[in-house]
Length: 67
Image 1: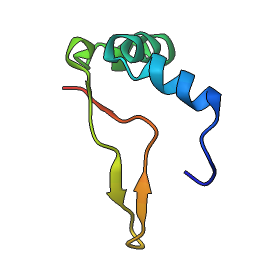
Image 2 (image 1 turned 90 degrees about the vertical axis):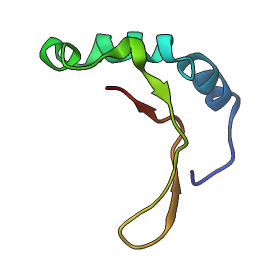
Image 3 (image 1 turned 180 degrees about the vertical axis):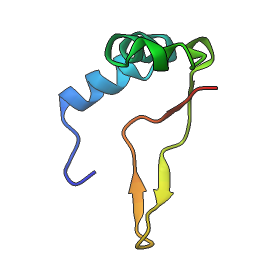
Image 4 (image 1 turned 30 degrees about the horizontal axis):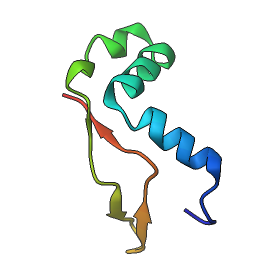
């Protein structure tokens, strides 16, 4: 993240940080063929820190994994 958090960030994270809410959004925006391949009932919030190709730390807002 490049700047300070805003109240909007907190609302975004609070609402979409719940796996069932995130799953609802995923269902709404992804093609049905892709949604059918995901088990969104098992969507899990995972830590969002990683190192990119240039070895710089990056942090996600929200990161989920789905089988």
